Image (tube, rainbow, N blue to C red; front, side, top):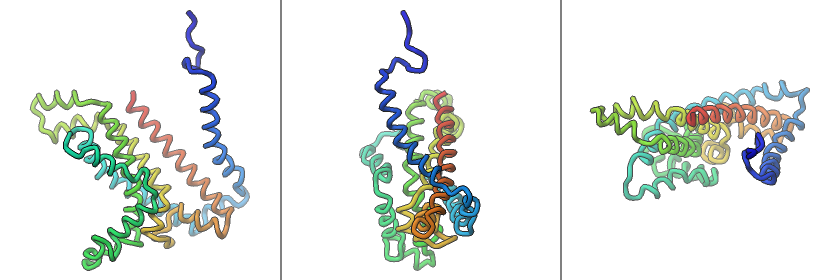
Length: 266
């Protein structure tokens, strides 16, 4: 009996046609950016003072937001994947809510929490801490929208790995903290890295929550997406050039995430 032809995996041909159309829907707009770039001015456009400041701020705040995602998201994923308690499904839905929530709504929520008239903002302001419209606000906005990516990725890795190795370690007398440090974290490290990379990518591209909660002050809160938005009104060529830079960084980040997830599967 003849097996399926190489490269088709037994799938019907029409499925590949539809998949190709879907891929073109993503790739054509990206190709349009490349075609639209004014390559004669490209170095000048991407190395302007405002562009460099926005890129540096985006990379710095995204790294800080990713760190917060790891610190907060890892315990959340562990609790969701390794325990059972009343209201767990509701908690999971709330944790993942920023995935579907419009970012501008997230920005308003953060503003009414940490702004001067917010739930915590008044107390913080009394203590001399003003968060809204600061670089800290950028980090918090990015963390808010990026955190679910790490939780979702790590929780999936934990459930795929199962708990048999942890159970064996516990029966041998290891404490819960030792099991976590010596067994659980090393076991799902590729999933954690993949989630961290995806969180970084989401933080890097954050726009709505940042604009609403942090504003747009050059060198303070104006990240690369905000710079692109402003340049679109004054210098479209600069906006296109900076968009290409952001796409290139995003492609690199997604490739790293894919490599990390591939390691987790192997």
